[in-house]
Length: 428
Image 1 (tube, one colour):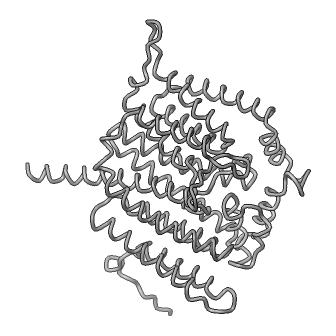
Image 2: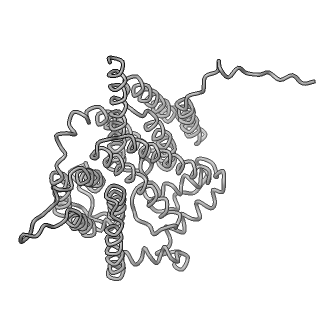
Image 3: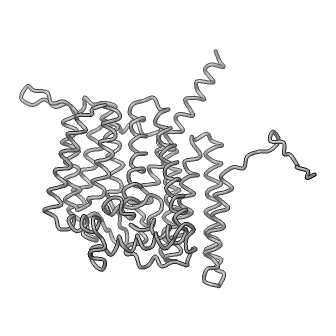
């Protein structure tokens, strides 16, 4: 008779997911280091460096009780797949992305550490709106047009996209409205204009600036965040419906009047009608995802370079080709977990401003992920925005780490409040 060995579960400790993330780092970067047949120690060194940073960040957040340590852990897993794919596509691009990752981690630590020292000083709704308008005007005056959109500012060797930071300012603007809607109450000819309608005019003005820059993807993202915050915190169903109808009518006329938008709609509805022209990007994306099947062709064994802008807009397609549909699903699940942790933070906050801020930041990451993954899989038209923490680009990565740092700081405030309440009870 076979004998079975029973393990005492009381004495066994669950393995922390931090070790799994470090193991995946070493596996991915180790595989890349031998991909060419010649051992490239520098790539493996990058993997070891990332694993060390992940350990340091995770245990620092826990030791100093800085809030939800799993936020950074989930993002670290997303970054592992993104950095590995960037290095696979181009060594130079991958190294640059790794440098931006280091800067982003520094931004995350600084933001989560100093947030509570400064946030009460900057809560004016007009302050955030003025900053947004200033960045819009600055971009229109000295901005550079790249790929049809005038959304870059180039100063010597430094270039950045103001729109990546405008979306964070917009979340602050919405949070300020939720906390103090009376600040948008305007009196015209002895008639008081309700704050919601002033908000609507101001938001559509922001969307108008995005249209002038031909930054339609970010405009859609901003609008989705706007409707979500208003619906959740104001419970204004009719008002949301009016905004949605007005935006839908505006989008219809924009598609008719702007050939660029019309071409995007055509490539979405029937990309195979012009497979060598308008539909080239999306069809190559679909071919790449399909050729990867469930388990992928293997890291370095696919042909993602056939996809235009693969390092930015179509990085998800490259991951799905070489890491398989399961790799793509893993990315989606990680973002779902990130949004879940963000919503959990929002629900536990008490102050209206911070609650709306956490909700806005979380939905920004969630909607941005949906828009880009939905675009490259032909669920929705292509929007041209980046996949947070995965797509190549300094502005995108830094803004994503800013959002992560703010969420981390907000979760830290919850932990401090709980500790304070426990100490207060003990003292009594």
